[in-house]
Image (tube, rainbow, N blue to C red; front, side, top):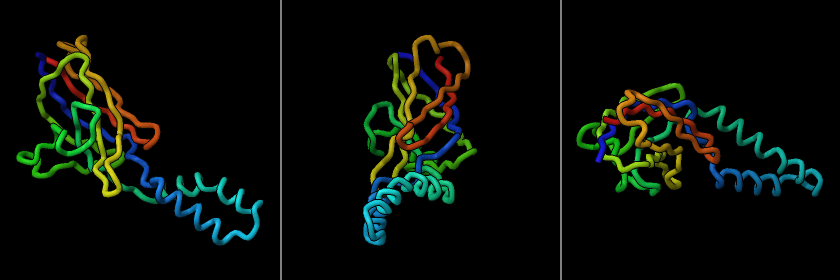
Length: 160
């Protein structure tokens, strides 16, 4: 079995700070304060712009962890290592990078998933695959992204 060293994580864009519960509350508010159906329809159409404004106004970092499976949960994570990094997750914000430097055994192709630990439920930040052809190529970078969350991360690694 080959060994991969995950070297670094760079946050291009953290996950959206606006989840479905916020959008539902906004829709309820619009229905409560808008008197007629036409205006209500226009108010509901404006909700995506309101959600985007909330995300832009807030610079919420992600509490990142990684798994070798498509299953969320700190019990499935291989990084961060609480005994080394002194925490279960690593806070990463837009434009920031964090050193990982963890070696894992990989079976090809090996899926790596990034997650954001969140009180409302962990969110998928993106995934990438380590391929057998990556072995011996030196440091490589792959994009892990999730369109639903709007997140994008570059992960650098090498396979020896």
